[in-house]
Picture 1 (cartoon, rainbow, N blue to C red):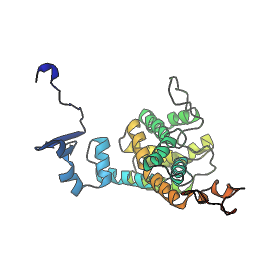
Picture 2: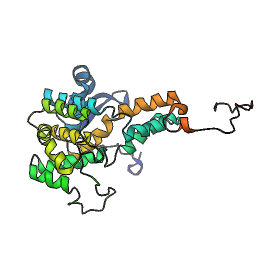
Picture 3: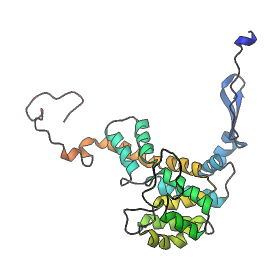
Picture 4: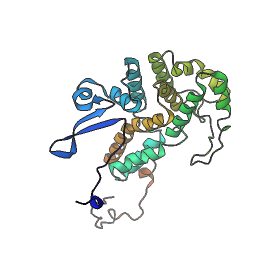
Length: 282
């Protein structure tokens, strides 16, 4: 083969992952290493999922408190519930018979935004990196969250203080419980500081803390940057989207809220004794 037709081997650059190929199949990995740890020899038999996820995102093995904090974050937001817009998006896709990927993509799309979504997490972690536990800076930010907004972006200005629920009256019980649990794990971090000043912030802006406010502070305590926290938040909420999409697909559109009960057929072929369309039994 001449030099002009020689095919170069791909040379991917990654500090996260290293693979050694099988001797008889260069397309299959014999060994896979995540930041130097052998995934299938060491991590698989010895580590928990939260420990592995921490290693993937941070690049270091977590201590017991960090692993526990990430595990509790995952539990708290694994299923935001049917009142959450991203879950309802997945339910809509599921009841309509969409593919599994489409249901999850619907949840990701709706849950990516600035109202209870992943972009709110991004903004808050960025603010934690900037302000730390400086009370005056946080009060200024929450009062005027768009004061430094001077760029052209796909994201519009905030219509509320990020991390707080503009349509709420009091802080919901699950949020208080999550805040308490996470602050217990990390008593000297941002999450504990937020717990200490929660009521003060709520009085300032006149509406309560939201789950994004709690989770963003905990992710900052984990050492995640804004983009890492945004990405992980999207991932951790997918289990709830998945199971609700599957459930609604099984229940069918007739039992789906708002639509099934209010769909009235004035010329139902079944009531007239006419044959129904195969696969579309009304």
